[in-house]
Image: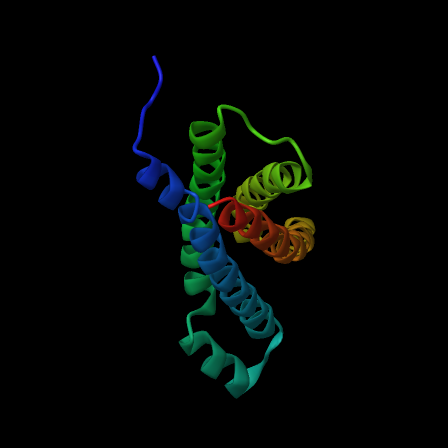
Length: 156
């Protein structure tokens, strides 16, 4: 059984994944900012710490991180699904491989949360390292994704 969609729907589906992922890249940068504020709060003392605690950076970082995890995994699956629907195959190349790696990194990073909540510094350091690696890959993915979108637009 195959899924038959109109050519118009198939064409416009091509843009859902890139738009969603660009939005998630912006949200990821915001999550990194919140994470840095959490670290700053943890290291602050006295009045500065009291002021930083009011920002509830830890809660906001955790919430945004949870949303990022869900949407990034969903976006990766969606991108592969649209590619398969439109082409009958996946194009195995750097963009796909890096995207799958990013999906694994964000899952691993999120899985460290219970250890961080218990104060494990190794988990905190690993979380930070994974997330900055993820952010770097995400920027590269955004650029390579634009190149893919350009190919789609030139075929139209």
